[in-house]
Image 1 (cartoon, rainbow, N blue to C red):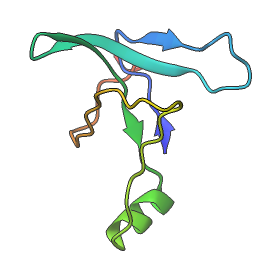
Image 2 (cartoon, rainbow, N blue to C red):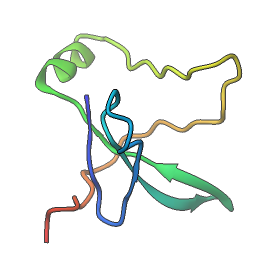
Image 3 (cartoon, helix red, strand yellow):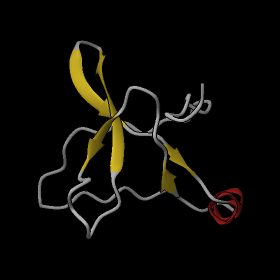
Length: 81
């Protein structure tokens, strides 16, 4: 999967050359501040999912923060008008 760059997003980690820049939109969900990222599955990812595969979320460290995974339509991207 690759991260997308939605309109009005902020760049996270763009100065960390060992990582790909992640773009997030700051928003509020049920009164709680949140950062939302959008991901586009590749054709290979879709084949795995359609064959019954899973999506894994990996969080570094030993404490797991609250997270939300959801499916939705494609966002308006930064370079689209």
